[in-house]
Amino acid sequence: MKPLEILSALPKWSTAKPDQILASPAFAFPCRLGEEAAVLRLGAVQGGDTLDLSILFGDEPHELRLSRSPRFPELDKVWDGRAEMPEPILLALVEKECGAFFQMLENAVRRQLRLTGLSTATGSGERILFAQAADIVFAISRSDTVAGAFGMLRYLDMSHAELRSETLPFHAEYAVFALSAADVTSLAVGDALLLPEVGTVSPRLIVDRRFVVSETGVDPFSDDGRCRIVSGERNPMTLGELFDAAEGREIPKLKDVALSPDGAPPVQLRAVQNGKPIAFGHLGRLGDQSAFIVESLST
Figure 1 (tube, helix red, strand yellow):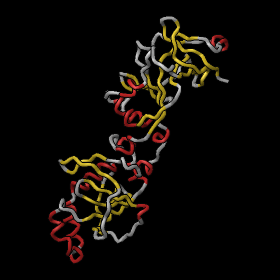
Figure 2 (spheres, rainbow, N blue to C red; figure 1 turned 60 degrees about the horizontal axis):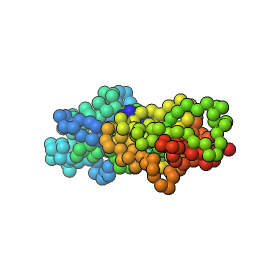
Figure 3 (tube, rainbow, N blue to C red; figure 1 turned 180 degrees about the horizontal axis):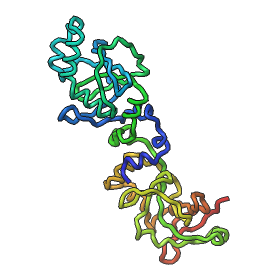
Figure 4 (cartoon, rainbow, N blue to C red; figure 1 turned 120 degrees about the vertical axis):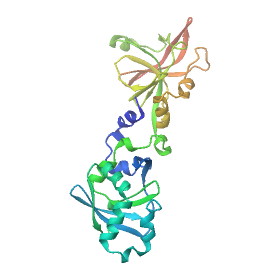
């Protein structure tokens, strides 16, 4: 699985509305300003001295507030005196100077952008997106069209600290084997289930019962109904660690949970089937074999 696939499999993000995605500090929209690659981020602080424009995305009217920027040198020269300029001349200059910026917005929203005039609207902050791309600070009215175009999971920066710090529970899985209903019913305190995998096969991590982390990466978890011997406690794993595992980076937690058959004191474990515990016990020895020693049964 890739990081975006992992994110898409989590309820919090799979059902996220565009506004929720836009509200995330991890939002980072990759774009181009002419030949220059840039990243559009939200939450820019915009001063009161703005050039307020009326535009259309297709047939949908919008307000665009543009801050002064060295990106537009000719517009910058007349900025302080723009109120005295005839509107057609000012708009022609804006069209000339801001062509690459307008093209970026048009590409992002996927609708033709047309400049229709100066704006006198005063939209509230609740329906305005404040943004910055490279050295261009601007605000644009927030319609369903605009929010839907930008508010997609693929525009979240998977390297952002806040996103990576989210946690999911995991437990280590040490063995998987078939155990019939009759065998489950007959389990008793003191029984031993052999675990030849321990010490020879690397454990796997079952994260949120959605993902399997192994030395080969991250895969979707699917419960096939077999008995699983897992760690006694669940521990937290960050999304960042999960993303790293998906991208083939080292997974320290796989080493941290490895069992030593001769370890002391005995390691507490659980036997689970279909997501429910059937017995609790510890790692012990039966002859020269590692085994799960049943201490108690699930009621």
